[in-house]
Length: 200
Image (cartoon, rainbow, N blue to C red; front, side, top):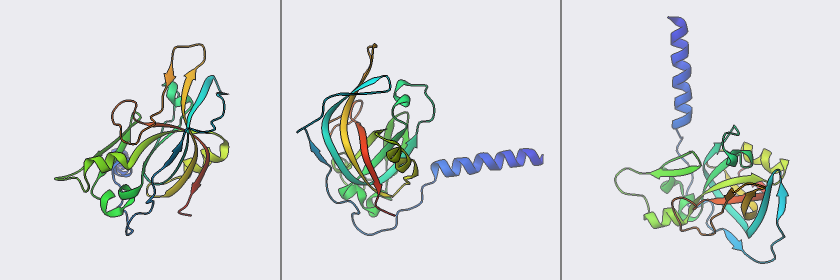
């Protein structure tokens, strides 16, 4: 009986950690500026593991971490090159008063948001001021930094939006180049060369 109690307690604690998100406590927008994207002066494609990486745009973003998901295994091809997804918010989506009225989750490479009654800001602003980013760490320092990012950290990421092709197979992962698209293909596939936690 005692053993069953501890098993139940462990499951309950795990569920609480997974689904309970503490409220954000700050005033105004922590990351007011839009991401900066440029198609100019891009390097040639390069090899990474068994993939060819093709840069589509330079990309720099300062944003609040709305959610982070760690993909542990190598069940899917994507998991072999991108270990983390970051849901990031800027402008009105970096305002605690907005974030606290949204339920934000991630799973199976998707970023989801919902609300009770009316959305805190127009849906178009939620879409255009937040994004799901499939992170490809360009080096160990970036991987370590992203591993330590927490919900509501303000982070600075620089690198490239990229397309990735698995060599010798008919498989390609494409990045979005827009902040206003939704649905399949709307996520940023982000090769990150520099990652900083501005909250520290």
